[in-house]
Every structure is written in structure tokens, then in C-alpha cells.
Length: 431
Ligand code: SDX
Image (cartoon, rainbow, N blue to C red; front, side, top):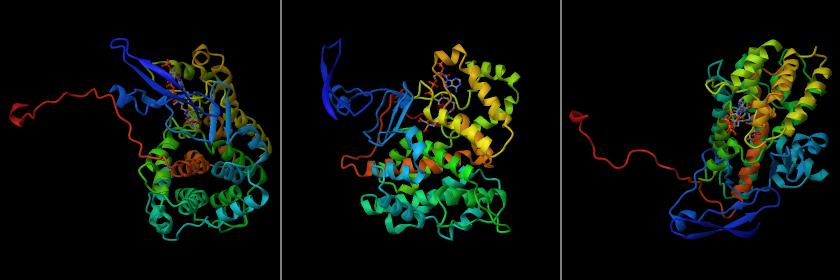
């Protein structure tokens, strides 16, 4: 970071405050306001953190105006074309693309942590059969710290690395168990001879009664989707993980908090909400009334899978996922999914509407992903779980980056207080 400064002056008193400016490798420079309250007695006010950089990071860069997404400097399009998800996970955690021997060693470490403690089985069966899989994920991932006392010192790099491997390795096993519990089928153990995505599909879809082998189209599609969902700078769930971890909480509890945040329909829960929305729209003729609802300020309805806090251009991931949609539907021999045709028409109509153009609202990562998951036989209740599996790598990468920073301190924002001024207690007889 290179520094220069910015002068803030109060026109009433003429007092001035010099604020250091930090400039990163790419993107907007930042005003360092860490001493603002000490020097002026004032806080900044930024609900939703629209103009706030909460940290410095070298993991992911987004240019929202240009629709650019880089993982450790590499364009997402190139990583999607050339890498496996495990290779991208190595890149996000370590900062460089792995050499062959490094990738082999990393894959082996992940593979040897895919099983969960057998006692966790009763944990899953304790949930109602129809519990939402994300509810099970929050509980099951949070409970992992009850099993792994041997590596919970968050200030020990070796403990951090072991916990990182455990989380990335076990999240598909827990996700598949959540699904199997929902459908009343026996849990399937992971297999060490299968790749990350093939293993997940087998744990979800195989049954003891017959052999199962994931088809290549599904494995390739899942690999691409996981790469595209792996990380995304300081989004709500990643910021939740960072803030939780800032108190020194263990990584399993922090990732469970991230899963909870991701579940919201304004965030990762949108992919499930898009499928419900498309099913409710039903036909092309019905698109108009839904677009009108989305534009109606008195109607809380929003076009799910559209808009983004950062992207004011097409989300590069949505463009890639739309392409994969075509390939998956062709490859699986599905008759073109009517919901995909409907989604394409909805995008076309919305992007010609002044309301969306003026507000720079484009399809985001969640708009098309559910179409693919559905084509792979994954139920909509599992769509956000799939997002959580991929994003666990990003959450863990940010957690490791933050905990390795010697300047790391607990996050403790302030507020603009607009409640009652001091007043005395009023007895019951006088209320
Ligand atoms: C993800 O942050 C990340 O990086 C997230 C993510 C990741 O990888 O981690 O990319 C994943 O969460 C993608 C977003 C998934 N959510 C949805 O698809 C839900 C639908 N989208 C919206 O709820 C909304 O666009 C958000 C939450 C995504 C962004 O909200 P902002 O930044 O607070 O935007 P805003 O509410 O200030 O909207 C600006 C204007 C408003 O209108 P005006 O008040 O200016 O008239 O655009 C309107 C909004 O009403 N608007 C929409 C809209 N999104 C914004 N109007 C209709 N439909 C929409 N989807």
C-alpha cells in the first residue's frame, strides 16, 4: 500500500484533519479513518457498508463497473476454463497456482479428511425429516468444534491449516448427509478414489441397492459452478466469518455463522428463490406483471437473481453459468428446460426495461445456477447448500489471511444513536 493524504475540514470551525490515503494494487483508494473519532469526536455513517473497506485482502478483486472478477489476480474465465475446483481452492488458500506435486499433496490432504466422526450420525437423525438442509448445515458445521479439540488454537498456523483442510473436506460429506436425511435414505460414506465433485454426487445420489457412477457432464458442471462460487471479496457471509473470527472464535463456529448469513434470500438463498420465482411466473406471458411488481416500490417483491451491490455490469459468473446451462441441458439430453427458456426471456425483457437499465441491474450469479442444479437432479432446497460447499473455500481463505495478520484485532463498529436521551425510571403506578 502506498500512502498520501486527504484533508477534511469543518467549515464552521475551520479545523482540519489529515486522513492518510491507502492505495492497493487495483481498485478504489481508501481513506484511513481509524483515528477520525479520536481527532474529531465523529464517526462515519455507512449502513450496509456501501462505501466502507473493512480490511485489506489479496485474495479476490472485483471491478463492478467492468464486470471483472480475479482470484489472486487470475481472471475467473481462465480459471473456469483450465482448473479443477481443488486447484482453485489451493490458489485461494496459498496465493499461487499449485505445481503438480503441490496439487497432488493438497488433494491427498483434503481426501483424507472427508469422513466425519461417526457420532455425528445421531446429530443428523435428531432433525425433523423435513428440516431445511441449510438448517442442518448450520448446526452440523458448528458442532464440528466439539469433535476436533486437537487443533483449535487459532493462533497456531499448523492448527489453522488442519482446520482449513477439515472444513473443505468435510463440508460435502455433511451436505450430502443433510440431503440423505431429508429423503430418508441411508448416509453414503465418501470414497478416497473419487474427485471432489464426483464424491459429492455419489454421496448424494447413490443407494446401497445398486452401483452408481456420476456422469461426466454433471461432474464438469459442478466443478465449474464451485469455481465460480468459491469466493467473492467481502460479501455478507465472508464479512460474517471475518467478524466472528475477529474475537478468536474457532473456525467451525465462524463458518457456521457464514452459512447462516449465506442462507438469506438477498444473498446465497437467491438461487433457490429464483427457481420459485420462475415456477410462479410460469409462462412468458406472465413476465410483464412480475416485472411490474419488481418495479413497484410498494411491493416488497424483487426480481430474484437480479442486481448486485458491486456489479453494475453483467456478473461475469452469470454469463459463464448461462453458457454452462446450454451445455448441461444439451449434454444431459434434457428437452430444453422450460424454466431455462423462461429465464432467458425474463433476462431479455428486463434488460430492455428503463427501470433496470437506469439502476444497472443485471443477472447475478444466482440467476441461472439453479437451472443447472435442477438439471443435475439436485432439489431446490439444496441449491444454497451447493453455494455453501463452494464458498467454504473462500471463507476459509479469508479466515487464514485474517488470522495470519499480526495487526488483526476484534471488529467492533459504533453507531448513530437515535434512541431516548437519559431519563429516570417510572414506577408501575405512574405509567
Ligand atoms: C449474492 O455481495 C456479493 O458478492 C454477493 C454474491 C457473492 O458471490 O457472495 O455475489 C452472491 O448474494 C448475489 C445477490 C443474490 N441476491 C439476489 O439476487 C436478490 C435480488 N437482488 C436484490 O435484493 C439486490 O439487488 C441486492 C441485495 C443483491 C443488492 O442490494 P443493494 O446493493 O442494497 O441494492 P439496492 O437495494 O440499493 O438497489 C438499488 C435500487 C433500488 O431501487 P431505488 O430505491 O434506487 O429506486 O435497485 C432496486 C432497488 O429497489 N433493486 C431491485 C433489485 N435489486 C435492486 N429492484 C427489483 N429487483 C431487484 N432484484
